[in-house]
Image (cartoon, rainbow, N blue to C red; front, side, top):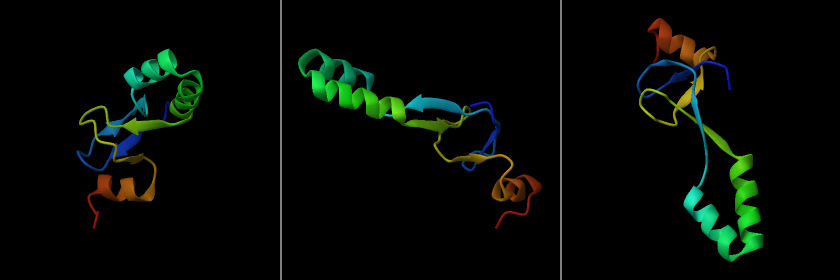
Length: 78
């Protein structure tokens, strides 16, 4: 992701940090013991990525060019 986001928690604007959902340790464990659940879990993790704020780590980011972010940046947020 190269777009800029606005964090509604801390107010910072910048590139988001993107992480896969789930746990790498659980994924490895499932692959070691059970092939089919390991495959399903891996596919689920690869298909789902979440954006987080680089400053505070919150998952409350919205596109910086959205109307809500523009209101916050202009200081007229409700």
